[in-house]
Image 1 (cartoon, rainbow, N blue to C red):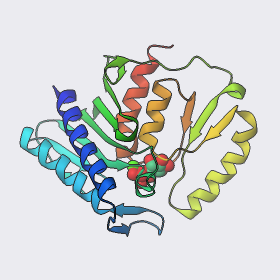
Image 2 (cartoon, rainbow, N blue to C red):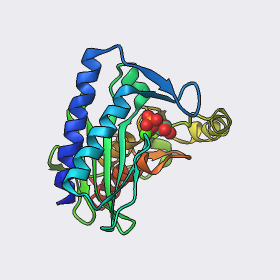
Image 3 (tube, helix red, strand yellow):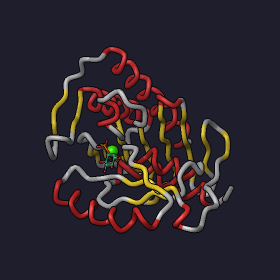
Amino acid sequence: MLLDLARSVALEAAELLMAGLRRGNLAVDTKTSPTDMVSEMDRAAEQLIVDMLRSARPHDAILGEEGANDAGTSGVRWVVDPIDGTTNYLHGLPGFAVSIAAELHGTTVAGVVADPMHNETFTAVAGGGARRNGEPISVATVDDPSLALVSTGFSYDPERRRRQAAVLVAVLPAVGDLRRMGAASVDLCSVACGRVDAHYERGLQPWDYAAGALVATEAGRHRG
Ligand code: IPD
Ligand code: CA
């Protein structure tokens, strides 16, 4: 099953990330801006994930945040974020994850978000509900925005951040409270298990949300 493969690959990559944290002294570069960091562990985890997926399913396509871009012939495409929440990871803060989704002919059919600092693995299969560490989860029941705990995230691009700040000014007085936790995939899983009532963010890339969005959508079919 695609989900079983995604889960075992994500857990292996998550272990690698924890080993990197214990070791410390990680080499870091920047990407789109001086605050958009990529470390040797982002690259090593993506390599491990790509190697494991390729060896299990050589005909699938793979898209990864750190550059993996294989065309495939099977109709399955893997969408991979080896570390979502790289800033948290590099600061030793909890709230980062390995995110792996499987698409079949362009539709996400399975997703895993593995958050090793919290020992939580979120999974979903299209039409099959969402789970945390194997237990079914459901979204919260708050419908009134003024009572809602809402999470958001910000781009690395200063111009987009300026617009996001303006949106924040309008949103903040209209909701219960806001959180910026630092990994969109985990934020979507927090919606899925009812820890927050909503997440909004512009400018995310497919690897940030593919798995988490399926987890949240599936959890949304079962309200707590
Ligand atoms: C980022 C995180 C963050 C979100 C950013 C993403 P990265 O991904 O998901 O929460 O606000 O938009 O780029 O760079 O840590 O993989
Ligand atoms: Ca990401």
